[in-house]
Image (tube, rainbow, N blue to C red):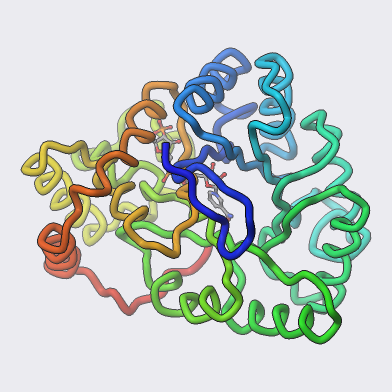
Length: 327
Ligand SMILES: NC(=O)c1ccc[n+]([C@@H]2O[C@H](COP(=O)([O-])OP(=O)(O)OC[C@H]3O[C@@H](n4cnc5c(N)ncnc54)[C@H](OP(=O)(O)O)[C@@H]3O)[C@@H](O)[C@H]2O)c1
């Protein structure tokens, strides 16, 4: 495993990390959750991502049960939670100080831990001023509840304003952003957010590096039973002709390079030095074995291969400049 610094912070995260959206505590039972976390940890993964909204807390609870059962020393792994979607009611959602503090305590209870290594605002909240968020997160750091705070799916403009607020008030600004980033959806990271990452030394915990599995080629000939897109029909809108053409082209190149499509897609993400860690999802331990092996294949992506990837993404209907909407 390769370990990368989270932006300019001193924290080191495994280049491939594991998330829990749609899987643990939801479609994967406790035995499967434990098997996936163990497979990841045994391969050197040291970062596991949750959110209060994943299965309405069930994902974090399942990860917590697995972590306790596996008995990992606390200083050998990092966990994150994300706050926004806490449920019905005016103060159980969003980024108000009340909800951010209460959601942090709830995540700690669910996972059975004393502090979160990383805590994210899951998406922007137009009802909460940015300075309230910056001050609340600093309060949680001061109380030892979280170590690093960041954002997910935030705009460059919001990130710049938060950085400026933190500088103005002598506080700690966001350390990281969690954006979607993969071969099919790259413009926000590469175009919109890149200057902000550089300005504030932000790290990134990029999500959906396989585009929920599309880049593994598993949807090239239809939707397999039991797959993520079969279980979550609204995600099928990502199966556009353009995306499928790109996935098929990635599969053909992977075969030529003696790599699997999943490893090629992940290695491509990791080639971007602004990526601190690529957060994969996995419903089975074998997928983790496969995905963590991508770390060793990054060096196969030399200039020649990278320019072939550029051509195939463009030739398969790619539009590098388009900005897809966040989910
Ligand atoms: N901040 C946000 O708004 C946000 C949004 C989305 C995700 N995330 C985070 O990022 C994590 C990863 O997102 P993601 O699930 O979209 O990641 P992904 O890695 O793009 O897709 C993961 C899915 O692809 C399939 N898969 C994985 N490896 C495979 C392989 N080697 N071969 C074939 N199929 C494979 C599995 O689905 P099946 O086996 O079920 O088909 C798996 O659940 C989430 O768990 C979550 O923690 C954050």
